[in-house]
Length: 242
Image (tube, rainbow, N blue to C red; front, top):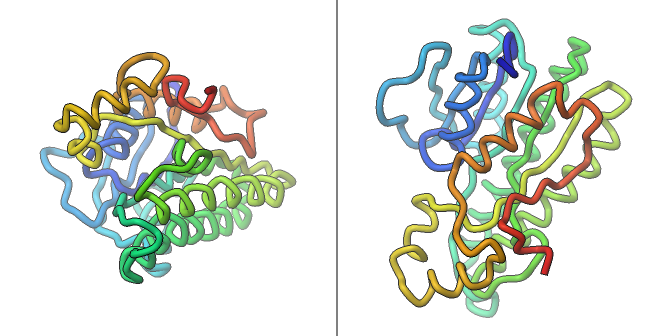
């Protein structure tokens, strides 16, 4: 198993991409703290525990790291996946939309990188931190201004953190999904015109699945990627190649 004896924390793990990542980590041998602001539905797999957390709050993120250490004896991998996709045009965007998207999608990632790296440095753990970015951190998209900014910020935070943490053997990378079939994109999938536009703009001709991202996360969490840091791994059906 590719993650045998590793301990991981995955945020936003109750559904969609985060759930797929956390469950695949367990299958690959890791002990995993599943975290989300929403309850986990179903029975947790053996080797996992669940902790409710609001990643826009630094104290909640720190508690997740502490819980992993207490329950499983350490921390090798953090996946900063929790995010929201609120939409509004920039010219009329309410402050509450901007503030919530930035707080969760960007500040929450920062809190995770800070807390995980501090622990890893203190214990001399050559760990892996994986941040969830998006193709919209690279390209613009109408009504998604706050989201685009937050994910672009994640990419830059990833690069800067990777350089700072490389001397300690801690790797920091981002995964940038294209349009993936999840609860967040259900509205697009159910709208014939919107779905046709997204599929038509994706060179491979279809939306991705959560496991497409989970496979990428396993690679970045494993020793197979031991020489990879500061990278943005696009899993997008060819979207940003255009």
